[in-house]
Length: 209
Image (cartoon, rainbow, N blue to C red; front, top):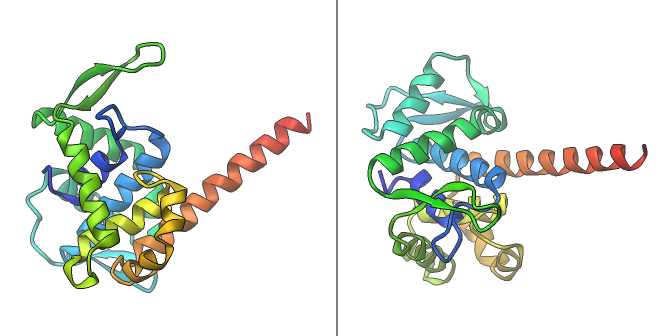
């Protein structure tokens, strides 16, 4: 569980000091994208004319991934972008429930209004996630596996787990890693752009009275 791509994405999106996930909407997109990408990398999903299609591969053994795969089998093939937007918050909450059950998250309180939140029970998991990201961005390309390359690319695209300044600084390397990221990355970029456009439209509408 702790080494699945969505779990690694989750810890990457946590506050670097071991606090809770920041920017939950972005983190939800990243976790959903990581889960779908994990299924692609494991051979459980494939691209079929721009749509995600389950294969006949055996279940992964990971509860979150297998639940997602079972849901996909009951529906008509969806575009990658639609797949990312659908159920992203449920995926994030399900992952938190599973990580909590495994003892990897515990209850804490936020610095704002002291709301109850879940935080990593061991902050070193967050540091390890960032160390693996740094390795993907700086190590020889031959030493970076597809999952690490995909996660770095997804983090940069989502804005969760990697700052814009870091994404710009590593732009050339990210272009190399993107080749290993699969069909989810362009869909994630479109989803992020769609969210940004919706926020701008909402702001313009409210400003216009």
